[in-house]
Length: 378
Image 1 (cartoon, helix red, strand yellow):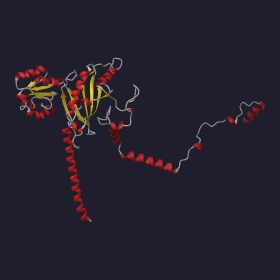
Image 2 (cartoon, helix red, strand yellow):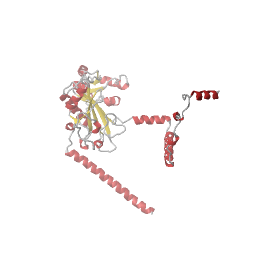
Image 3 (cartoon, rainbow, N blue to C red):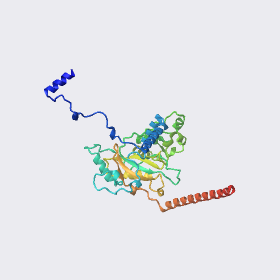
Image 4 (spheres, rainbow, N blue to C red):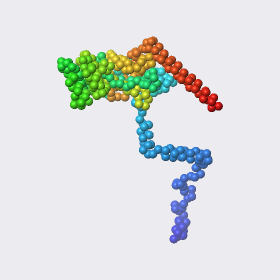
């Protein structure tokens, strides 16, 4: 059959069914001749890398690897956005940008006045952008918690700071007042306290018949100062004292302070104890610049009172932010920082010199004790 087909093709003289060798192209397969050869050194390096990966994989279990990933994602509060200022990292950066639009990380930290920072925030909160012209203003303070002793840091605290220009903070604060006189109790309730108690209810509080957990703050008249001493363990941080401003003779003034004051929280960093943070609301964007600046000055003065100014600046950097929002502007707070006197600086220097002398004596004593022991051993 094939012979007949070949004869018919040859007799007809047609070349349409004849295969042509030049038209055959191999598409499948790979060109083995182009494969690069690997030296012994490269093979050894690859094997070492595989062994290292295998050893690292076998070092931890599956759940331990997940926990490690979670811990890597968790940062200290000071390192969370917008982070903490480190002057050494900005030493090689240019001072000021040449354009209006620039990347913050490529230049040193730009410090603004309170008025400039508020104007920029108001532009962002305009109706065409975020549309919140009455946004609360948040003041973030980066703190240095070190003290004279290396092992001791500034203790954290929660307090209410009375500001010269109160504002609507949208916080419901319940206040419990203590007063011995019935008229003072009525005056306290009229001034804004939820309830006013006398000496008769102190025993009920101790026995647990009256709960004080429902109240955020406690104030007391000075005539009840000795009567409320048994409640110190029950009230704890809410116990009214002259230090926290809860004990005094003018109950309406005390209640107004706790109703309209600013909450100042100083918290230490659990990862880096030498660092600290403080976040508080100091006003609203609709307020005049002078009022907000006065509130910021009072809050900074109250915060700096927790540390000796002779040790150096307590505030590392102050940022002005809005709620909600992540945009921040560093403000210059040097005019409001307390200036240490020469006497305070001399006292700290004398204490440091005494500590150095004690350390030198201890090292000398240890070396003197060690020399006879070494001689006896020889």
